[in-house]
Every structure is written in C-alpha cells, then in structure tokens.
Image (cartoon, rainbow over all chains, first blue to last red; front, side, top):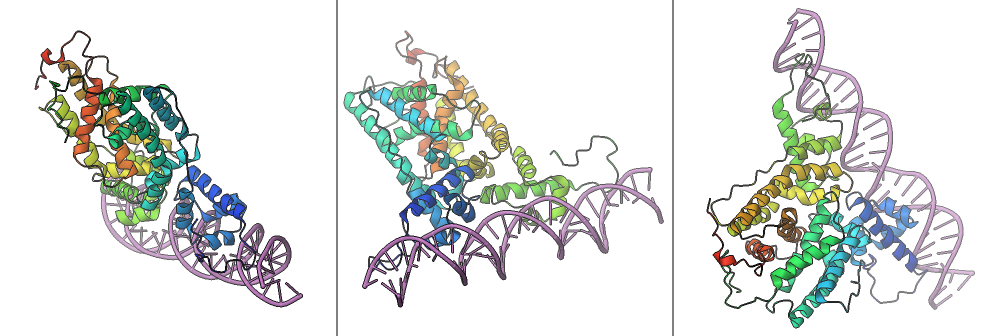
Length: 218
Length: 218
DNA sequence: GACCTGCGGAACGGTTGCGTCTCGCAAGTC
DNA sequence: GACTTGCGAGACGCAACCGTTCCGCAGGTC
C-alpha cells in the first residue's frame, strides 16, 4: 500500500484511524479511470470524485498521481482460472481463450493497452503489471506446458518462456492492433495447435529438415 | 493532406500560396512529439514550437489536434526493405528481424506503442497506421510465405494472415511488454523456425518433403 | 473531558493548454 | 498599385487540473 506517511510501527494509534474502505474506493476508482482514459488523461480530481472522496484524502495517502497509479496497479491480481482435467492441448486452449476474453472484459485486460504507452514514461507501471497480472498467468501456462513435456506432447528441451510468448504473443497482438472483426473463440485453438505442432517431440532425432539450416539447440 | 480549408480546385491562386515546407515541418514535428510523448501529452503549442511555426499557421491547416495527428499518421510510410535472393526461411528471418530493429529505432516503430492506447479513443489513428505501416509490411510477409508455398516449405492450404500473426505477434508482444533484457537478434530466427515447423506440409500426406523441389533462388 | 487525526467540501494561486484574434510584414495575382 | 492570402509573434479569455490549505465535523486514544 505504501502510504505516503511512511510511519514505522511506532505509536500509530493516535487520532482517528484511516478508513480502510476509502483505500479500496480510491484504488478502485483509479483502476477504473486508468482503464477508461489511460494514464495521461487520468486526473486526481476525477479519482476523488469517482471514489467519493476529498482531494485532501488522496494527498494524505499519496504524494501524487504517479504514486497513486503505481500503487493501484500493484494491487491488481488476476488469479488464473483453474482449468484442469482436460488434455494438455485443451488446457492450453482454455487458458489462451481466457486471455482473449479477459482482454476486453476484465479490468486488468482493459488496463493493459493503456499501460503499454505509459510504460515508456513510467517503467515501474509495466513492471508492476507484469508481476501482478502477467507473471501468474505465465506460470499457469508454464505448468501446463510442463505437463505436456511429462506426457510426451511437448519435447523435453522446450524453452518454456519462449513457448509462452509464441502462444500469448499472437493473441495479444491481435487484440491490440484491433483488426476488424476482433478475434473470435476459435483463434485460441488455432494458435495452440500451431505451437504444439512446432513443439512436438522430433519424430526422428536424425531429422532432416531439408528447408532450413538446422537449428542447433545450443 | 486534407487541409481544413477544403477548397476545391476552383480559383486557387489568390494571395500568397502556402509554404509546402511548413506542411512537412508540421507533420514531422507532430510525428516526433507523438513518438516521444504520446497522443494525450502532445500539445499544439509544442508542435508549433518544434516546427518553428506560429499557432495560427497550425489552425489555418487543421481544425484541431485530432485532425492534425490523423493527418500526420496518414503520411507515415514504411516501405518494407527488399530482402531477396535468400531462402524463404532466411527471408522471413530478415523481415522479422527488421520488425524488431525498427521497433525502437524508426519513427513508426516508436509511434506504435503510443497509438495502441490512443486507439481506444481514436480508432482512426490505428486504422491509418495499419494501412500505412502494417499493411505493406504484412504484404511483404505474405509474398515470402507464398514463395514458401510454391517451393514446398509451407503447406498449400496455409492461412497467410494467420501465419503472419504467428510470426509478428510474438515479436511485437516481446517488444511491447518490455521484458528485460529486450529481445535480441536471435529471436527472429527462433520464431520463424517454430512457425515454419508448424506450417510445414504434413509429412504423412504421401509427400516426402526432402525430395520436393528445392527453393528456387529467384 | 482533552487531544489527536481522518474526512468531505470548498476554495486558493499557479500553471498549462486550448482556440481565437490582432498586428505587421511577405508573397503572390489582377 | 490594389487586393488577397500566408506567416510569426504574441496576447486574449476560457477551462481544466495541480497541489495546498482551511473549515467544521467525526471517530478514535489517553
């Protein structure tokens, strides 16, 4: 939470305590406005108004807009939904389809494109978003991919991080560049099937890819 | 150019003609500031100052900030560099590597992330960018992929647009989310090799890849 | 009770940007 | 020369927002 009055634990029970519901209201209003208008267009007055809070209350907690937004983004958390029991392929499809769905329905999804341009001026924002939203999601993908290695669908020397980029990258790109029509539910399966084909264990170790110079797995 | 004084071709030689160099200066300054600060932070006064132009000159040409930026983005054009003679695989690698390099060196590349958040409020901006920058690049990728189909490296029923997303998506995504360290020159080859594996003609279709005609170097 | 801090509301001065306008001059046509 | 438009410079009124401050009250501890 990183309140600006960074008082240590020493003697902190004088006077009226802060209302924790206001903390939530402020952060919520900040995230909502961030999703709607982006960082540059977000104003302290709008946050105060939407949160139903005086500006003094804002500045008692945060030194300014930057700290407020950094703190708000740090509270984002998207627990990746549990998709289990299915095959590795179907699990990947479900996870990737969740990425597509959330990109214009969830709060974190709507914030993502706005952070992309804000990241140039405030790298901490993207860093925080990666830690709170992207990293858990990637961890879930990684677990499923590892399951694929165990079950023999994915080759053992796979670079998991790169594989995740191959899955999420095309989906995110499609969402971001806003082609018409927007991607539908079938896209996830197409991407997953393509990537799984690429990641399949090599049929014969002495493989002869006639086309390209053999990628020597360093 | 879509000047705001939308006079038809009728009787257009009264008074002092507009200085065409100022048009270029204005558009140039707009694009530069757009790349540096993004749409929301771009101000007419900054454009005028950077272009060495009075504000009246700006408003004589454009009705406001939105028209100015739309017009400026519409003048963007990135001719995809000619990469020929190599194999289909190497040509794709070269094109994708160009995407990576340009993303933080060229003007259009630096503008891209800023347009992503602006697109939510001004869809015409992204549409214009797609037409001027992305579409030519995609056409080049498409041509190379078609060459791959002809030479048997890529299966005939490939969905070219989707294949391009599979190539460009991961690269763009990596550039946008700004992981450290930033992607290096080796990423293009990894992506291309993965995608080409996925797009290879199905081996059990009775076709033996390695006796199929080698790529004609034309 | 005395004392402290939190709170909403509202106002403050200062800054920034918008879009308009005027001025004096330049560069063209008729 | 008369006329028209382009141009840079700068000022205009207007609006928004910043960060601060004061008020009066509420909600806590001692």
